[in-house]
Amino acid sequence: MSLIIILMLSLIFAYVLVVSYIGPMRILKPRQKNFLIDGKVVTSPSDLGLEYEDVQIKSFDGVDLKGWLVKSVGDPIGNVIYIHGTYTNKAFGLKRAKFLSENGYNVLLIDLRYHGESGGRFCTYGYFEKFDLSEWISFILKRYPDLPVSLFGISLGGAVALQTAGIDNRVCAVIAEGSFSNFYDLIYEYQKTKFKFASKFLTDKILENCERISGLKVNEISPLDYVKRISCPVLYIHGKNDETVKPWHSEVLFRYTAKGELFLVDNAGHVNSWDIVGDAYKERILAFLKSSCRSKIN
Image (cartoon, rainbow, N blue to C red; front, side, top):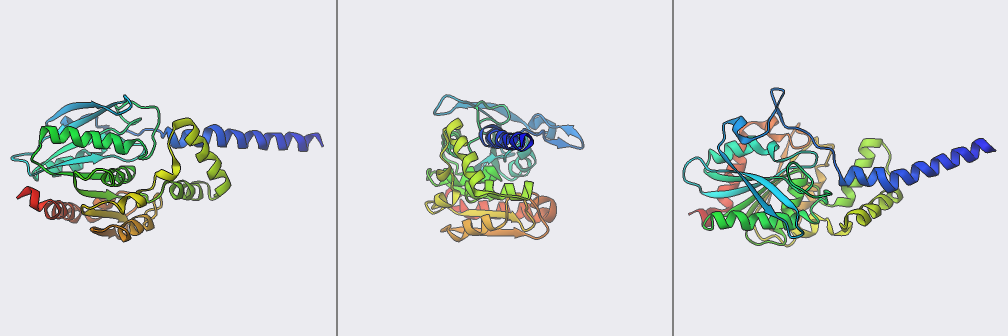
């Protein structure tokens, strides 16, 4: 009998630990990765031969947010703000910044709150980040008031871009690669993929504690709700073999987007479509940006 009691107490302790601490912290404080090229850590645009400027703003709630501004090679035709994914930072956008700057775009690469060099205690998956990104839009428009602003988000960054475009009509175009459509569904699916088991009860309890700890509201982290308000064109890119964020997320987002394009890539996984299709990836992006912001560029 004592063994059964010990086992039960152990299970209760494990449940409380997972629900109250381990689960929420894995979500709110994702572990950071370094961006590598040929095994070397990339720490600045100069590592790729790019000239840049360190830039910084302060969020509405006092968080220091940092970024790099890579200027266009030649006369600029537009501004692109690059927003990275979970576990990463602005350095992961440098290869994209290189080809965009070579094709006439100023590229602002930002670190989301809690990521890279930016401050912030938690990652909130767009709940607070959409307001941060809106501040970055104000920043780039002060520098280049006559140039259109497009958002280019990868994974989490795509979800943040969509939520921002839903509240900020200064956005000319959005590229969302590997975005999720709904935060709750993302976390529930992550359980199934990572642990081969998922419980809505467990998900509910973990997310309730995420709300209590960070101040986010789970039901309000829904890019699907925001895309219904977006008036500018949106290009969705998604690997058909993506197991991190299933392709159906982009498919349903596209279905509810007024001016949407959907680029599903055969044999691609999570945000690696460029590796699979090569130059076709760059060509699709450049053509989309040109057509979406044509009236402002011309």
